[in-house]
Amino acid sequence: MFDTGSMLDVAIRRADGQTVVDLHRHDAPALPVLPALSGLLPNGVRRGSTVAVSGSLSLLFALLGAGSADGAWCALVGLPTISAEAAAEYGIELSRLALVPAPGPGWSTAVGALLDAVDLVAVRPPPRLAPGDVRRLSARARTHDSVLMPYLFKGDQWAGPDLRLRADEAEWSGAHDGHGRLIRRRLVVSVEGRGQASRSRSQPLWLPAAAGGVETVGVQTVGVQTVGVEGVDRVDGATVSDLAPLTARAG
Image (tube, rainbow, N blue to C red; front, top):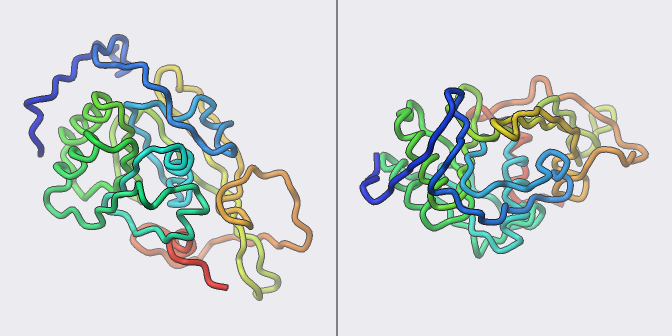
């Protein structure tokens, strides 16, 4: 829980939850996205919104990248530490990145304070987060023109986000007959939302791409073999291969 005495969130909504009139809504410019994500988010990421992400930590960092490179401050709460090399691949500026790896019992208080001051706040929700805290944090983001990005591992829940982005159908490329390094991964990323963003869209992406970062699928690379990921070990709901971009690349 956190103190909401100084925050007044006034909005008129339809029965389906769509905001009709929000007296605190500002016309702040949307945060940019990387070119490869523009087909999914043609208008960027709207300030004041809650964007739930699942299926790939690389997708989460790609969403942070363009905003960070454009001057936005970012925060990671309860998530693995990103390496300097991986941050550079996605455009995340470490000098404008706040890390809170273990906020403890004051999770909601820490996230609420960051939403007051930071443009993009990516969080791993703790188990059994109270529905009231979910509503208050989304309202806090809306009031302060920040963006709240809960990252959902398997089994995690976040009610009523403005957008949901999910990565599925992962296939790695680069290994030949069981030998060699995995160099890039093909994902299908889908997005759905509420109101004007209610039309579902999906797009295949290389994430990470062979040179790092994210690219649209379409350029064929000679001699690269694609392999599935069934049976890959999982750590706390994430595949080991998904955590690889968070640590420095070898070689």
